[in-house]
Structure formats: structure tokens, C-alpha cells
Image (cartoon, rainbow, N blue to C red; front, top):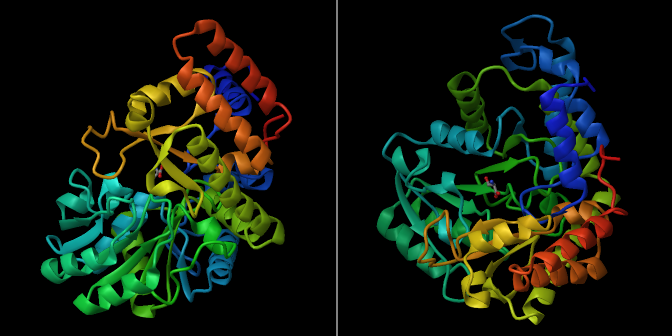
Length: 410
Ligand code: DSN
């Protein structure tokens, strides 16, 4: 690595932060060395607007083969007929679906942000809530989706497209019910599986294939690939519209180094080892939620069926999600502040935090370690004003993390 360069010094500091900390952000993970190698490769040098066999620039014979490999692996892993692996990330992928299937001003429906939905599913400050007429559904007082409520909202609003997916919902989505609601009102059903793609690939979370018209996903969360996205479908006409929406509609040259990383990650995700990993992600999330609940913390919906859960910090300890996030950060535990259902507080200072286990599970942590992590969280929150105790917790965390390796970090 280049010496005396500020950026490389900062990368080394970030490496150390990742190694000596407990990463609990539900959307983050650690990629393999092979995926890292693809992302740092010379594939970044090449322009290849278009699709395999139909490029605007010459010299794409190997890039074509890499993209075809990524497409085939995506089709095989998720059991679909069409895959576009070029979206730069999740939000552009969702924008491309809207660009392909909707006209400006059409009505869309998605889960509200404070119930666990995503910005691109119809939040007012996003393109999805400003270019389109967005109607949001929420969750009931127990934190569960109410499908009767979605149906009655859909019957009134008559959306052209319904989003099913989340960034902070800890339960199983009933894809069949979403299909029935969409059929009832004649809407496209789009499943955004960004958070659970790895769990779906491993068969530990139900697949929307056979129910959704389109599936979007990022590739860097539970799927443990590079920072990118894919759009999947079984409908040829929709797939063609999506290809056109990605290029030339919205994007330029694909990020070929990322496409290669996606291909490698998809192969990794097809192994028995990855399946065991995904099973452990869910076991760990359940254990961590249970351990925190035993320590008196209020878990939204009472637990989790996937890799994440929300904790209502205002009810649990009288602190906001932001305050708790900052306290935990100071000892090397990384979470994100998060709205909880029907949150009365603002998004930048909400009532809860979101916790997820994909990253710690990649490091090899299991149930025993989840109990220890819960203790660290509890001690830090309860001793946040005691400087010496906080320094001691920080030292213990650095020591605790040492034996759990991260690919690419010695
Ligand atoms: N930022 C992602 C997450 O944390 O869930 C969603 O885009």
C-alpha cells in the first residue's frame, strides 16, 4: 500500500476500527477475500455500456463473459429466468423498476419508514414519494403487518405497484398474501429482498419467486457480496423493460469490478457452508434479542424471525436511539438509530436502535458470544457516565474481538 498517503492511512484506521469493534448494523457484512480481490481489480478500467454481446465499446470479450457468469449464477441461485446485475445499488435498482413500470404521478404503496419500510418504497422526500402518489401501510400495535389493512388501503388507493420489503422488520413476509392483494387491485408486486437475500438463497427465509412480478436486491447485506444490486424476474416483457430502464434509461457503464464480485459472491452463497452461516445468522439474532429482553430491553414485536430486530430505547432505558447509538459507538459497538412503529420522534433522533447479526456471524460468533455482546451493550448503556468503566468496557471489547477474524484484515 502507498506510504505517507492520507487516504491509505485512513483506510488502515478503518481496518482497525472494523477489527476491534462489534459490528451490529443489520445491513452490513464482511466480504470474502475473493470478493475483495474482484473489487480491487483492473476490471474497473473498462467501459461497457450495453449488455453482453450488445456493447457500445469494443474490447468487452472478457467483460461479457464475467457478466454472463454473474447473470447465470443469479438465475440459478434464486431460481428465476431473468437477472439484471448492473444496478449500481439498491436505490437505483428500485428507481429503475419505477422507471420501467410506472408513469409519473401513478399511485404506489409501500411500508412506511417508521414501520420498517425503505425510503424508496414511497417516503415523501425520496423520488418514490415525490414523483409518484405514495400511500403507506404500517404495522399493528404488536409490530406485525396487518394484511387486511393493506388490502383495504389498496382497494381505496388502487396502486399500480405494491412494494413488499423492508429495512427494519423482524418478521416473515407472507408473499402469497401480497400477491393476492396485488391481484385484487391489479397492481404489480415488487419484492425488495435486499435485507434477506442471503437468507432466501439459503432457504432460511421464504422466497418471493412465484409471487412477485419483480424482485430487487442489494448484494452486500446478508448475501455478503460487493456493494451493488440485482433485479430479478420471471416475466420476459418486464425483464426487457427493466434492462432498458437500467441502460440507457438511468445508468451509464456498468461497474465491472463489482459485477465480478457479485458473480463470486453468488457462487459462495450456493455452498453448504453459506447455508450454515445463514442459519447461524438467524439463531444469533434470536439469541441476542432474547438476551437483551432478559436484561429488560423492549424488543419490537417481541423477537425476530430473521437477522435483525429493533429495540425501543425510550421505553427501555429512557434514552433516545441517537443517545444509545453514540454511547455504544464510544466503546466500539456499532448500531444505527432507528424509528420504531408509530414513533413520535424525528428520524434523526428516533426512539429505537436496529441490531443485526450478519457481520458478527461472518466473524464466527455463535450463541455464547451473543450473550456476551448483550452484556457489553447493557453495561455500556448503564455506565455511560462512568468514564473508567466505559474505558474498561472498550478494553474488554478489543480483547474479545481479537480471535474473530475478518477476511482481508489481519
Ligand atoms: N441503508 C440500508 C439499511 O441500512 O437498511 C437500506 O438502504
